[in-house]
Length: 159
Length: 159
DNA sequence: CGTAGAATCGCAACATTATAACCGAAGGTC
DNA sequence: GACCTTCGGTTATAATGTTGCGATTCTACG
Image (cartoon, rainbow over all chains, first blue to last red):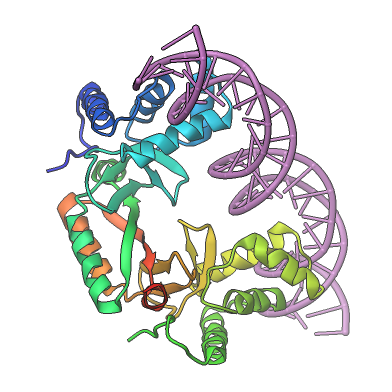
């Protein structure tokens, strides 16, 4: 089962796991995890709240990196291609992928109150799309699902 | 069953139906379908290809309407609130809703080749979300699903 | 009527997100 | 070390979306 980001947890292990996986994925694909790319990935993973590309600019600048948009977008594109992060279209923001290597489907729940994004098992959505594929006679190569609402933790606090 | 936009059809009836429904929905909600709003809706419906907000500006200008961004966005927001159009987050574009009044779920298939957007019955996706809701203990109030790939018609032509 | 209040629209400026084009720097390969 | 490819720095610009304010139009109610 995927981890629940709305429960307290030792977030440093999230980051550690992500970085370890990233190194493995890069090696498998003969891709170079350069300093900027690595740092961008760490920054994206610094919380479970999706981060905007322009939020990263000042953070990188603080650390002596170049801080122009193309730098960030190039790093994000690289990470997207390897499936290490996801782009949330409804937020124009980016978040770490908790299990790189899954299929064409990405599925998230986004809490409107705390802002944290929970990646969901995409299997069910993927199955559904397979059904759509045969019903409509289309060929699906990418799919996104974004649910937004209030997470359990925020629901508790408001009651 | 929802109409298949990838098959040849008399598109003027799509538009007529949409405009008629729009009038009904506005009346039900005590909302005013002003000239700009009506024209924006017609333009969005002028094809099944999602249209960008900035694409509408020159079209409106040609017809003597004000052509500044706020005009278009206000009309689009109005139509979105009434559920007469959908915004496709992965395209930053807008498309007519073929059956206003459905629930929180919107679901589209987007052809990467011809650009046409097919709205899908959202019931299955909505059911799935209800399951997510009880499993995770969250409260979902909005959801989008966007599948992209190649439509039957374009598949035929490429083979 | 006619006037008060609300909704709508025109307009100018600005904010946010993303891309293009060009070139030099860094790393890998032989 | 020479060459090639990938990567990153830099400037500029494109695409998308918002804010704020005042003028106008519509509507409800007396």
